[in-house]
Image 1: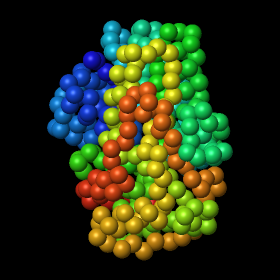
Image 2: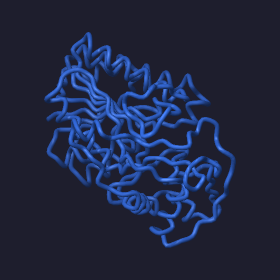
Image 3: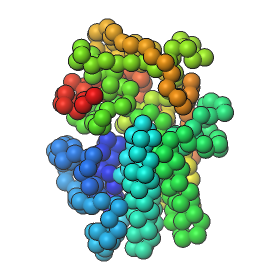
Length: 334
């Protein structure tokens, strides 16, 4: 199959592109390299093989038309977006422009060129603070950040295009992706805000302070509980979604995670086990908008796509550690 991967130089997109090429698909990666990295693309090519690279910004509609003209794809997996919750609260206009306008430009262009099968990278951030856990796809959507709102808006647009324009789409709502592919490609956000890479970096740099926000939640040990999913499991969900789109028409939403929650303290303990080191960390007050527990109900994706997570929290941290030990210290600017 011919598959377009937008944001393929980023974290989840690069792992997905790597897997698709390895399966024998003909892959094109579209990225503006603002946050994706050329060295990531080089690593994909080295590990899996060649692909077409399209340098373009989704906010440039004319360039998008030009670059996709006369191209045909069996499916498009759309990752290209800003993805940092805190940044989105500081710069909401930036997130609405990039994530919403950019995505709408892409979908509009795909419709014009009769490319109708889309897998959309969504997020559990669309739920906000849930009324109950584990969280089902039918839960209320009340995003609490511009990032989450931008994802929900694009889900709504996709659903309308499926209803009225013949598009065929799946939205995958990820919970907490982490880990790496054999330590060769992994998370490289600037600035890094995700817990597992920050935690592991603290083992490597004694001057880097790792903080736990909140120790008085109504959980087993007082720290917040999250559902972590290995990046390789997440990639397989996209592979399953491609097969799903071959059989089903319309629009569907799926949660993607393990259904098992881990507290922050449990994550720290697992990291200490993997690294063989003890961590000194700070404990601070809760951050506004941080729910006590966010855990996925993955029953729907298991039932309809036969997908189930295969990797444990220890597997996630082991693979993340393999990458973090090779990661440039300059990635951590704060």
